[in-house]
Length: 285
Image 1 (cartoon, one colour):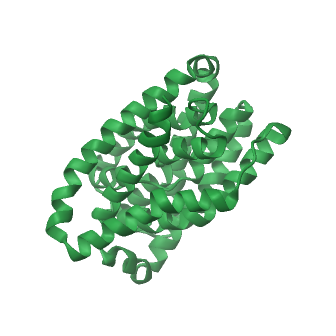
Image 2 (tube, rainbow, N blue to C red):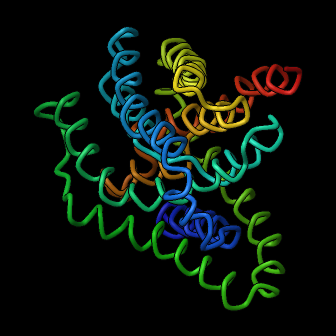
């Protein structure tokens, strides 16, 4: 178990972020300036409205402190490669989705450590573990920002190699992610069983609410249906592997997976079930 947490967990996230970088072009970052309006709406929805909605839902369902922190950690996470794939399936604006994923993922190194420290102190009070904001930022840089930068560089300077590497890396990341989700649930099985009803209801409510918030805000801002679908998915679907990793970084890895990781593990399965009807709805419009 310790090997899986200490090696497999950060390795899985690093591989996922490297795979994300391998699929990015320099133009994906420049697009932020050429499509400022659409990007600003997407960023507002994901960086500001998402945590606010999560905070309201956590309090609405009166979740246990560990579950509340886990849900909040998840809400601070950016989208991942999955959101780009789902945007394509939903006939959304994939270019906008990719740009949001790329920039928000890099921005998370600044936003996540401060928000994580706040949420832990707010919900856990005197039982909150000590959180080193600087240490968390450095760890996030090494396992998220650096792999993305390496991936973008490889695609720019060695495109053929990057394209050959992308497939095997993506498959390896999926296998590692499944193992981590199973281990996180198995290591906290009784905690999962005791809190499944309230946690499951809260997560499903959060995903649906965020998908609708992203869609509604984009349409109210006058964006195209394709842009609105992309923003909806970017707002509603988060990188659950990062959520699990954050829980491990915050609580340490000497006693197995932390209960803080359980919401992200459950979310990693639930999000596909909840988003499927939305994708079918988007495709039919």
